[in-house]
Image (cartoon, rainbow, N blue to C red):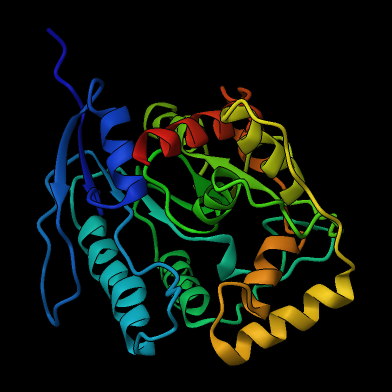
Length: 303
C-alpha cells in the first residue's frame, strides 16, 4: 500500500481552505495548521509540502487596523517560510492575490507587470511575495506564489452574493448600461492547479496568475444567475450619469450602492493565465460558465 504524501494546509476554516481540504483529502494525508502571527514563534513543519492560505482578506467594512494586514499576511508568512527553508518539506505554495500587483488594470494583467498595490491588503501580500523571492532557496525545494483573480464557489461571500440576492428578489438589474469584462477563478480550477503543483515535478518555481479561461461581464453574470433560477433576466439600462449620482448619494448616506461598490461591479479587470496553463501542460477542467453554475446552485441551497 502506497503511503500518502503529507500536506500541511493553513487557513482551512476559510472559503478556499475548506474547499481545498475536501478536494485534496482523498489523495493526501492532510494536516490542518491553525496559524496566526505571534512574535518569535517557531513552526515545526513535518510534511512534504506546505500550502499557506491563512491571512487577512479584504475588509469590506473598512474598519480594520492596517497593522492587522501586515501581521497576518506578511509577518506570519515570513515565519512559515523560514520554517519551510530548514524543514524537509520540498514544496511551499503561497496564496497571494492579483491585488498585490494592481487594483485597476488597463489591458491584460500578466506576471511581468510592475506591482503598484493601492491597499494595505495588496501591499502586505506583495511584501510577503518579495520576502519569499529574495530568500535563497535550497536545492530540491520549490516555491509557488499564486495570484488568483476573484475566486468563487460554494461558501463564497461577497459581491456575487449581492448580485444573487438582487436577482432572487426579482429586482431588475439597474446597471445594464455598463459593459465590462472581468476575470474570475472557479474554486475547482484553483484546487486543480494546486494539486498539479503538488504532483508535477516539472513545474518550475515562480509567480503565477490564476483565472478561468473566459472573461465575463457583470451583465453575463446576471444572466447566469437567472438561468440557475430558471427565470428570465430582468435588466434596465439606466444612464450611467444617473447611476453615478445615486452612488455618490450612497457614499453620504451609507446605502448599499456607493461609489466603491459601483466600481467593483462595473470595472474591467482581465488577468492572463497563459503562464500557468503552459507550465501545467493541461487545460483547466472547468469553464467559467460551469464554475458559475456550481456557485449559484450552492447559493440556492444556502437560502
